[in-house]
Amino acid sequence: MPITGTVDRHVNDSFEDVASVGDLDLWSLHVPKWAPISIVLDSVTRTDKCLERRDENPYDQAVAERTFPVSGRVNVVFRILHERNSGLALGPVPVRGAAGVENW
Image 1 (cartoon, rainbow, N blue to C red):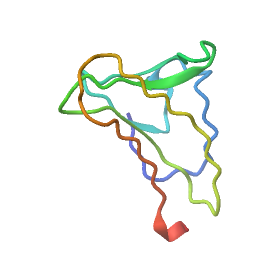
Image 2: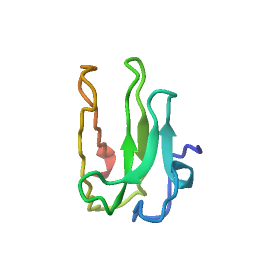
Image 3: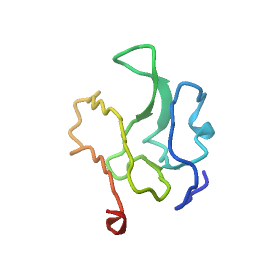
């Protein structure tokens, strides 16, 4: 997957027209063998597609990052559904949002 730190298009991503993670051209992905990232049906709505990140590796984790263009103000809307599918306690699931301080 290409990794980029700058983009010139504003984000308006939807996973509805995405067949696989290979179609996510502006996303930077780290996908270890035991921590896959997939496009799947939302387990709550059963109609919407979403990005699913599974971490079954205690030593590495999947990462999906999307770069935003430089903007004066951005409105971001997203949902996070955390499900534990096994009895293994591998620790907390990290979710990170970052904004450059120089743009505040």
